[in-house]
Image: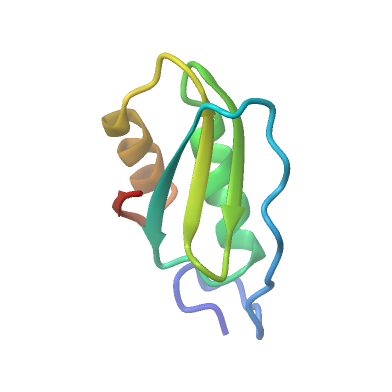
Length: 91
């Protein structure tokens, strides 16, 4: 069972990161994601940040690549926390 979001998922889905629109991405490490619902929550909140044009999540590694411009690391941290997870750093 997914312990991070209590969605009831028995096995974490492992999905390859989606292709995003630009090459100017920042990659962050997010802790606590264990399933597709977690990925959806984090992607959705980061996608609301102004200037973000794409979000790609690699669930097995916990990395999140954010494309766009005009956003800050602090805005991404706040979005990740809003989704219920923790930003563990930036690569």
